[in-house]
Length: 280
Image 1 (cartoon, rainbow, N blue to C red):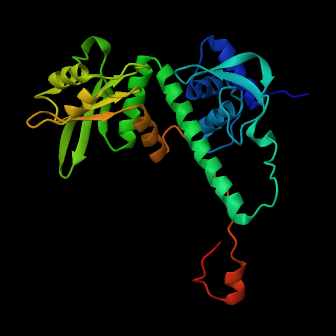
Image 2 (cartoon, one colour):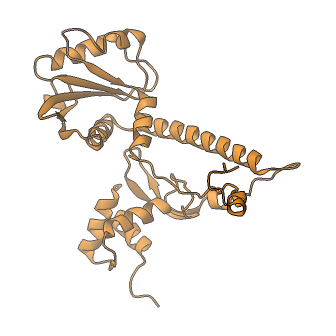
Image 3 (cartoon, rainbow, N blue to C red):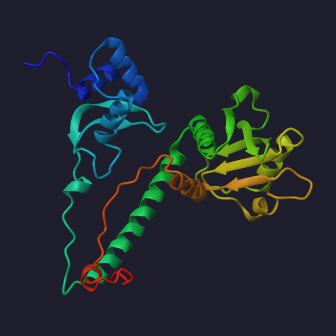
């Protein structure tokens, strides 16, 4: 008979005790404070995050577990399910692709590349849908962290009561000097951001900041694009929903890579001894 709970049982216990959704770090801190589980890892907080993600019904990736203990809120926190659930189909349990007729290495590789492009587009759509579900405050925090990944420093979100028309600000080092930067976030789901929003934002940062960055989960109207860069005015960089997702993929921010080895035929290289032979 076990004297101590498993890691999943410990996570569920602290979540139920809290009564509100927790981040993985908050769950870890509560487990340690209560002494519910003894960790044997260099980064134990990452162990908790990994376990929650693998057993979260709202996340699906190749190494995810079919048994789900947790759900995820729109702002990225987690809560325990009333009863464990089993995913209907996980990526590991999917039936292998069936080929018809005569297949070749080149045709299978083409199919694999097509499937990769499809997966990428589906993932981008999923990310953008989830970004549109974030509360405004969570989207502002997301924008702050994305800018930090790109090298911006001293970034902070402005409190709602003191934002002065901006959602956050910080600095970007350009050469030996620092540029003061402000950003604005519009978590819109349908309407495009028009010129009035850009003019209003520029008016709020003119004279105090050297650059503005405008994030939206929607798109920008042609009028907004036309005035983003104006002679004698603070430039405003426009980043729409699809661009945000591309930035995330570029920096592996909020996405993870699964490495799948793809083999190409090269036996002829060995036989001929000609390493310059093109692989098929």
